[in-house]
Length: 321
Image (tube, rainbow, N blue to C red; front, side, top):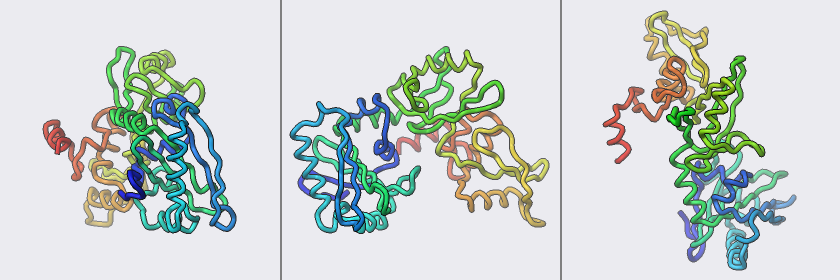
């Protein structure tokens, strides 16, 4: 974390913070204390700074906030700092790979904190695009909501029994009786409310959503972002190499096979390693394809690095370390 002036601290944003630099629903904006956002670009020569401001909550845009916001932007505009030019922004992005957004890798994120406000900067150093979106929040509101959102989004049955839980921003798959499906991004509102998809009708009480799914005969599955889109599996009974796809039951046959004398399990582990799939992810994918994606065994957090399920007591010890 870098101090840019008295009580001004800047750092690369976390993955959880990234989503708060994009347009969101009015419910989330209200709960996070959004004030508004600044949009800017560096112009044709890369050295200008052409900006416009969009209000969200004018009551929060106090004279103290406006004065401080101007000071923060002017500070970041000083020679060599990240907003001084397109070249300076590009240099910062190259030198801080940890600021690259996971789900939107052509963007980079920086958070600037003051005593009362949080400024979340989404940066794109490419010419021809807006180079900056700066979302301004009341810090205590944003941090409180993000802390609450760490609990995850609950999905229950109509009797209020929890079926599964996903992180804020993950997707679900809704399977219809006719075999078709639709995938929806979910956002945490509070422990009993969720935003599913977008639009005016996307806000649900979790029990209301469960009842609606039951009435329609739909099945809801988690599409965890912690899982890959697909991975390889080894079937020892048939000695086949299969492909498992996230959210789908069973497996697809592949035309791959180990060379003569090579162990099939080791061959598959190497294929997955080359594809960036860990043993924990592969084990969770295999379990999901066989036992359902809502079961605990389909979540990679329940496995160790060796791909073996973590016993409940061991998991409690690991989480308290």
